[in-house]
Length: 383
Ligand SMILES: *Cc1c(COP(=O)(O)O)cnc(C)c1O
Image 1 (cartoon, rainbow, N blue to C red):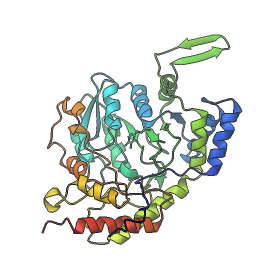
Image 2 (image 1 turned 90 degrees about the vertical axis):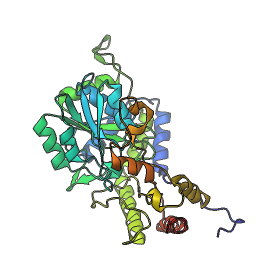
Image 3 (image 1 turned 90 degrees about the horizontal axis):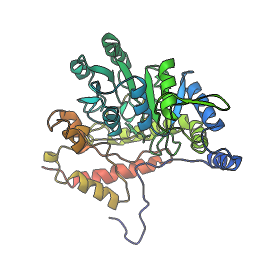
Image 4 (image 1 turned 60 degrees about the horizontal axis):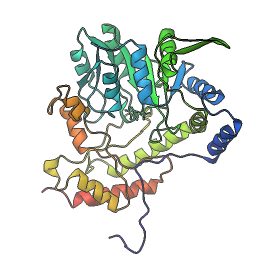
């Protein structure tokens, strides 16, 4: 029982860690007189490129903008199909619709949450132009098989690596190889620029297109000689944001090591017979953006997910949901998608809970989350 006289320490499911050096660097930029894209953006792109094995990197205001520009740079639009998982943050599919193409969903693994590559092959038609996979929670998709399928069918791959900065596949960092790899630096992600994102990779032509889409389609050929080559957007990162990113990138390996350690504690405490279904554990290349077990199926649980979340909140523990299945949202039902098409995405969408995981957490916080969840689920077991 909680002692109601004592305030319960609130534990959110995520929280960014911004250190004093980063705050000082931001203050320096604010005093410098140059706030928009300038030397700090150039430095962040160079440091990200070095982190990703020397590949070209272009930053932008969000991963959503990055994914949309990557699709445009690949020439994807009306009449084209892009294969993508039915379980992700909705931005993954929204960008496909926004460029005029059709998202063709496939199901995900119940434990990996990554797209089912056998279903990807089966979904390819003459109109398919690209595959848009997600490295869910930072667990890398099987890159050998993914790129073998893409190569065989002449498809471009645009990786949604919003969860996967610092992840690797068989020892190779996500973003250090592959076609176009898009990261997010939203405050909930493994590193942040407040809002922001980056694209790694791309052909020289695609990089030019991304730069044009990012900034008004404009080129400057001399001090008074401008041209606009296409009706571009406005998605450039600011130097203020880039300064935050520089401070974060310096800590990224440490942050991800901490995430792995905290997750290992969840697995350790929940042992062989956990009251929840644990996600696929992966290997040391997993960057653990989120920890998302599944509650027991509704027929084996006397409370709803909402009641579980509220009971956790009453114990001072924040719980998120990553994510409802995309095809069941109104905008995607309007495209013809229906319940029952992607059973794993739907089961995850209904049963998943995101438990606290962020670098500033203590191991004792994990203990507290596990005992609260055990307590609530024990009282809610269907005999
Ligand atoms: C966060 C996220 C995005 C969008 O990132 P923003 O930088 O907020 O635009 C896209 N895809 C996935 C899987 C995400 O988690």
